[in-house]
Image (cartoon, rainbow, N blue to C red):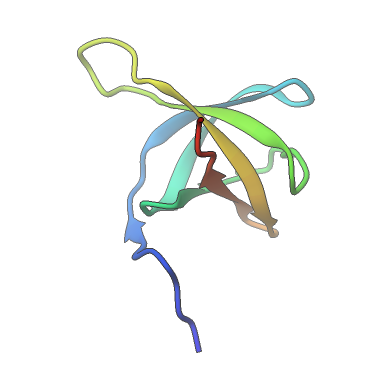
Length: 88
């Protein structure tokens, strides 16, 4: 059974993923939900599970989008699953 807490929406958005080990990568989302997002690796090496990354949606218009902290929760051959980190 494939029960997910959040409904996923196929959404291709340009994002900048930042992490000390990989620098700033311009990538794309595969899908997004209220709980997180799946980012396509597109051949880039990505941080390991448990690491926190900064993600910023690009090209929204009207100034820069907020930078959000996300945690790597899943890695596979195509990309990385990220969960939003709840800020205190």
